[in-house]
Image (cartoon, rainbow, N blue to C red):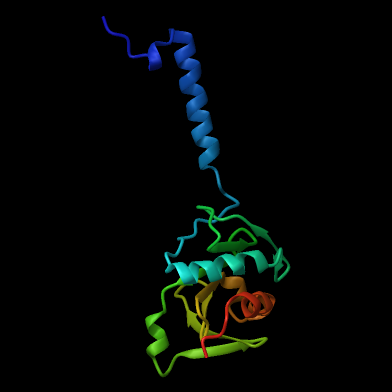
Length: 162
């Protein structure tokens, strides 16, 4: 008869190891406070700019504390359990070619505005050496306040392309 115990451990030790492994995986997978955020894959020069931006980002935006993202990355940040999400180094949105595209200025940083169906708005910087995208949940449908909190770090770390 062959034994199917991990690493040839006795029955009780094998059961304990299996139980501990399941518990560890369950705990590691729990990231309710960390939103799942796709990590951009920018070229090296843009990634360096994004790492500089990561060092400048504030602890709070619109009164919401900073949280982690899943997966963790210097190219992503979130505040308020994902109410506000920033991704640096995103691809240039096709909508920027649209002459009807709308934009807003927040403390010297120009952002293209996109309305997302069933959710809050998405803003992407324009005229910068790396594109920075900020998505807001429905609470911020008519509020550019979070962009104001992010303007100084963007101005400092992400050079203008003009």
